[in-house]
Length: 289
Length: 274
Image 1 (cartoon, rainbow over the protein chains, first blue to last red):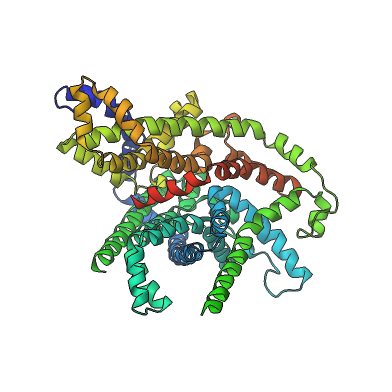
Image 2: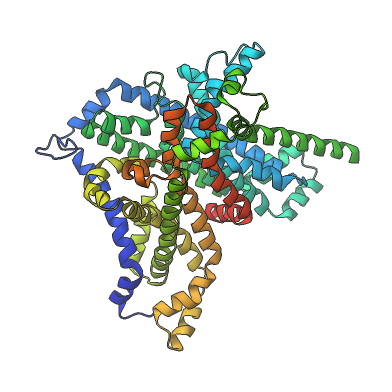
């Protein structure tokens, strides 16, 4: 691009998208941060209240149990999604003639929004599995998994794995394919066992795929809302509310805009810190190997 | 040695098949039950239908206003994705080709903004934009999607444009072309692979988005995920109709995927590697 008439260039190429970005994202973010220090009730603010909204948020026992529940959910879903996705990627790249069809099947759940997936699985857990259980008198599924906090947690994990493993599988497939065949051939000649090959050769050479996939699942776990809403709705008794739903409920169902927004800022800080830590650690591992 | 390889291959194939069936079973279950009258579902949700009824589909289509929601979803997705392609590619070109402190900082802010969860904005969002939304909520939603999608899309384009040599621009500029013409006639056609990625990644997100439309749209302008959710909430005891509604909701995107499968897969892998 030529130098000179730089204002005109800015006007043509950048002004509109940057303005929209500022209006939609930057301004509400700054405004939201500012409002947590006032007595804002959703319509007007009349006074500064310092950290009151934050202290109130952290005194809310439901918020604490939500944070614990969300952390558990993020860790378990992160591990489960990535283990399954990596397994699927290995399966699909194992030079089967049916690889393309299998890949299609694994990927399809990912096309569908969390809300629709959630209600499909609600039917499965509430009706289909209960009916199988009574027909064959199985010991589990006698009662719907969604009625108990512990089993509802695992139901959330199952649906999340089913939904996102296909997407992460694609990322791992890309990583596996990018490894040069010479390296693998050389390791084979040296007599590396299949396990050693995977652990010492393939996985380090595709470390970037792990960085990306872990980042996406970490972020997705913290931000999960749709599946949560449609599958458990937070029940029984608000014990399966993930942080996103908790914030939504606090603000829009109970009208606590001040604490709702402070909790949202807390959520932002947690997500940013966790993602930053994960990417830094992963990048360091990428370089070391 | 060869025989054992053959067995290993068969074992992988069979385990793959079993997992594929498990992944697809929920859809089959929904389909089978969508064809049954209510009392058959209650008797046994797993049995094949003894008598097939298409009535569930008719009922679901009218009650969830299927064609209206489908039209809304298509309009909103197409307009948002089109606008994102147009504006992000131009912005990325500007940021990649103009080297200054301003463009560097702007790019960094865009990248950093991708970590901000929507939940951190949604509460002030509604009070700031309430009037704009009430004016025309579909236009407002498209405007919001441009704001939320521009960072990732620009980032994807930026990586690709940086690899295109500047000589191309300079040669065209010597021939008397202006910046606008250089971009649209020379650079943009070269961006086709990224454009496919940007289109697919954004289309999947916007088509399935729930939280933002839930806050913004009215009953007349509902998208498919919204009307499905509301319909299911109202008629969840009418199992057959609920299942038919779910099937209708997933059908468009699955058909779209089967047609464009190759682009989907390569789009996601290029998007992820960046």
